[in-house]
Structures are given as structure tokens and as C-alpha cells.
Length: 93
Image 1 (cartoon, one colour):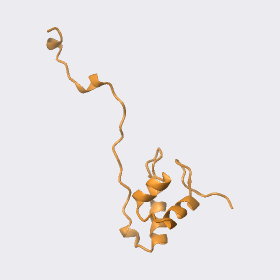
Image 2: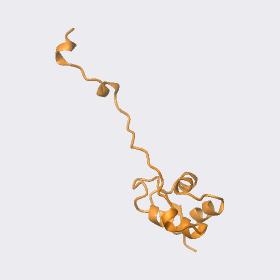
Image 3: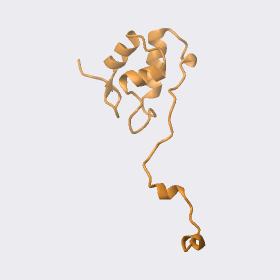
Image 4: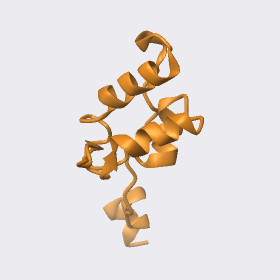
């Protein structure tokens, strides 16, 4: 049988998601932590609805009770000088 990728960004298959749910993952955050589904470039915009539907079906919960995964703000390294504001007049002192 061919692999069916649900999360294309992280290459997570339907079989991996089903295994995680069978092993006890019952929330989107657990599925995300255990499989990396939703952690790719699209941040779950492509796969989250499918994963949520799978969770509802496999756990027997109503789809409305399956909450989306939490997200963190993007973090990028930056120079410390970007966080300070120097007044041109103070620079000469």
C-alpha cells in the first residue's frame, strides 16, 4: 500500500498519525509533539483539519471538542543593538 502523507511539510503519514492516536494521543498538541504534524513551513494550515478529523473519528469525540494546536510566535535571532535606541546627540558623549 502506498504511503498517504497527511502533513506534507513534515512528511507525516496517515499510518503514523493513527499509531500515535492508538498509543494515547488525544489532543492536537499531543499529536503534534509525537509526530511533528503541523510543525512544518505551513504551521498546520494544510493538515490540521485532516488531523483533527482523524482525532475525532478515532477517539469518538465530537469534532467540535477537538481544539486546534497551540502556536508560538516565530523567533528569529537578532543583534542586541537592534533592541536599543541611541540618540545621535548622546552618541558623542
